[in-house]
Length: 151
Image 1: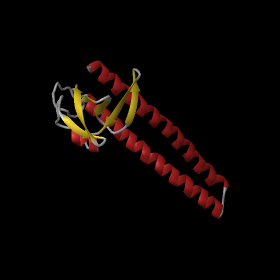
Image 2: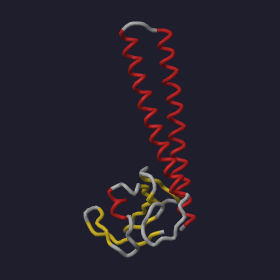
Image 3: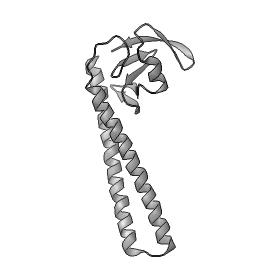
Image 4: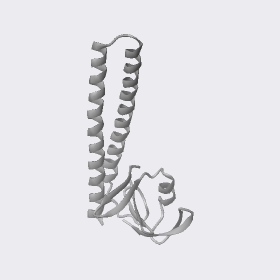
């Protein structure tokens, strides 16, 4: 199971790095667009276009910052080594037919043909799961679900 968790962490790291790289390319293109606009335009149309690109740039930079925070969190949680029976950061949990990794809230990943949901300890479900053990029940999707496994 530890090997599987490592594969999930690696898939998350790969996905986040790819998103960051694409956004950095987009940021570069928008920055170059702003510079080109500055050289070739004047008047109200210029100001509006430049302002829109500046807003796009701020949005891209904010998204990159959030993704970098998620990546840092994945690295931090990945380094936690624990054989705890209770759910904690870094735990891989089977809840019914679903699998969850308490790490950073980056959503769903597919690894070896199975879907895994990465969520933070502060997410609503993360808060419900923290401290619980295999065999305990939690309320999930409006109905009680047994925790089938905690790794």
